Length: 400
Ligand code: CTP
Image 1 (cartoon, rainbow, N blue to C red):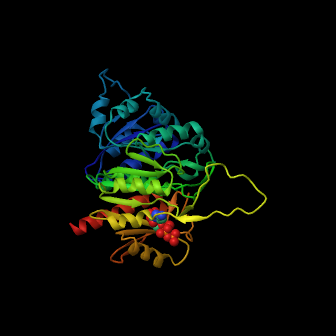
Image 2 (image 1 turned 90 degrees about the vertical axis):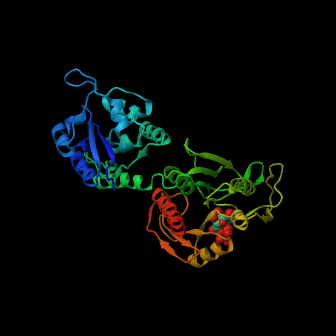
Image 3 (image 1 turned 45 degrees about the vertical axis):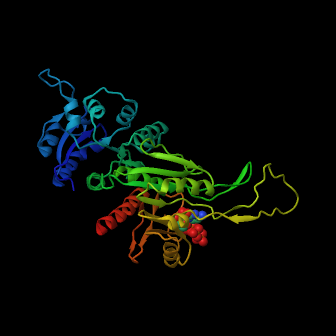
């Protein structure tokens, strides 16, 4: 999976550093050329000799060599196809987030142009601490890939998130990155996500439980696979910290329709993951509706179905819809695929644990117009996103 990829493994001072010779071996077995940076603190847990032996390369710690010569962090940074910092301590993560550059690793990090992967390893409360979480969020927003940590028993005896991902998972994550990377280069992908909100009066609205997580995962994955991405995001979705692709915020189903139509022509792929309201109050009040001692009847009228409208206008676009069902799942999804003139429909069932709104995982079934049904297991939404995009890509190569 990593044939001829040049990888810098940077080891920092967490107890998990003792596992890194095995990590080097796994990366090398997967075909990678590995060079290792080890910080002074990490040398308490692992030796230069063991890392040099398994990587068959020199291992560097300091900015100045023992003969007084400069250790060239710039050429290290430019050499690498990927920089993997594993284990990454809270301290190193904090320094990376703040641009601090007081060792060879951090100088190489600032010089590197390649993708950066960080595998945090620390005790559970250090990981959960607001400052660590904020620093991780800063790195994520800059496009750094955060791998793990895992849940389990920690060196302190406490249980929780903080374990470094094992060597197979780290190697697989890097492998998948290189397989998927740039696969969608040259494609314009538009994704809708999150809920819409329909005003009842100036202070109240009707909406749904969508957080936008699945659509945002799709936008992130499409960007990472090289596509030009536009995300049309309902204002009620969870906040996102993105600097890489265009985000257009919308509120109502009508705005979702208008923005989708504006972006449809340029799209090669249009994925409608938003939870669009089917009905809206027919006559929203201009003033706050006052409480009265009587029932309140709201007359609702249908909104326009965005996806069906796009389906009617479709030329060369690949149009993908979602279906969230509670019963007769396959039948309902197939009928929506046909009715809305889609190329694929991604089915979620509310009956599956860990699937649906607000979760970090999803369990989906992808159905195409030929009747092919691909049922995927429960996995993180980020992985589901890659699977959906890969399925679409495969259909492209099958038709070309
Ligand atoms: N959709 C849309 N515009 C709407 C309603 C839904 O574009 N006004 C899209 C959704 O984004 C989703 C697909 O249609 O991609 C299916 O949505 P879903 O709510 O499952 O189905 P509906 O068509 O609304 O039918 P029902 O609510 O009866 O299941």
